[in-house]
Amino acid sequence: MRFILCLSCAWALGLAQSTEPDPAVAPATPPTFQQDKHAYAVLPNYRTAEGSVPFQPISTQKKFVLATEDSFDYGVWITTGFFAGLSQISGSGNEIYGQGVKGFAYRYGVNYADQIIGNYFPEAIVPMLFHTDPRYFRKGEGSKWSRVEHAVGFIFVCKSDSGRTVFNVNEFVGNAMAASVAISYHTGNRTWGDGVQQMGSFLVSDMIGQVLKEFWPDVKRYFRKDKH
Image (cartoon, rainbow, N blue to C red):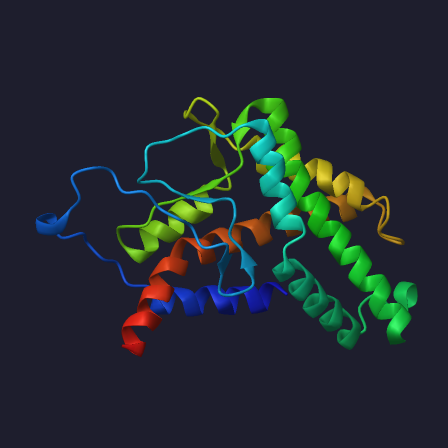
């Protein structure tokens, strides 16, 4: 799974092009941005925000809305099925899940449950408790590697509801709580080591997702330019 995501990330970076705004046509007022609901057609993009836009906090209700959108989006159903299929083809967990339709359904259910708790804890529950913002704020300009560093670094920092940059409790506390819940239904994987591994999986997935989202507008512009 990580290998496929890394290939996707590398592909996005190869297409991304840094662009500088033309001062002659720059708008007089700060621009507003409407984020695509999906990046790369299937990756939910609801909690991505533009860092160039003046910060505006979101309500607790909106935090839960974001987590809900990320959890029940059609893209999640597709990617969950894809990774459940890979797990079945590779024979991972055969001693627990078995094969056939029943084995696939079991894998799908476990993977989908991981997605849901991996969204609600870091995107809604922990941000509500610690008054932090769960959104990823794109850099959107500068060199490719500076933007990669920004996307990766945003795993370790986040914005508070007041707009200050603080330690990212959403990712670390939220994903630790999510991993603790996950090992309760992962039959045969219920040790602390399994929990740490699950937490690491959540963090890596979020990190790669942020890199892909950082460059999605660049990739989209590239294909539009190529098409015309």
